[in-house]
Image (cartoon, rainbow, N blue to C red; front, side):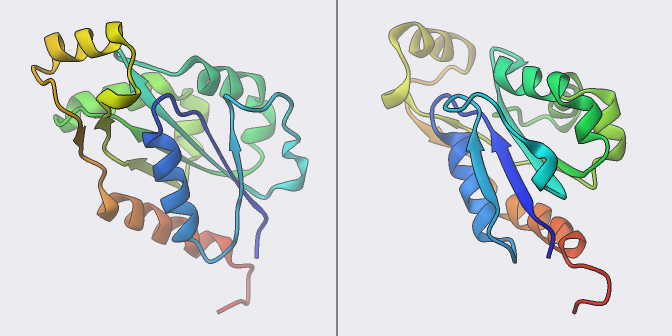
Length: 168
């Protein structure tokens, strides 16, 4: 089995929750790294890197973009998968967010791309964030639209690649 890393950034816990659900669905125990809690990452030990982030105010978290940019030359030498947590329901707009979130070089070689849905968790937001969500999304309640189905489908694609040649 291939050594796997799931690297992500999470502001209010949605992406972290999705990353752990993904990890539970894989046939290997991946290493988990939250970019908001760690500094230097050595990718040399990993065969596969799964990268996840979420959209806030229309943009990917800076930590994920910085990670992709800093490690681009290493990442393109590995098997990778990319996933995104966002509340966008329109497939075309969600794809645009995904495309602007990840570098083209990674999108082109990614073996799996996932849209895991998202959440508005008012209990974890500050006052300004709650205000913005109330205005833009027209809601003042916590909402979860995490797609277990999409996480499972992504895990299935990735799992097929995790087995070494000759493994069943």
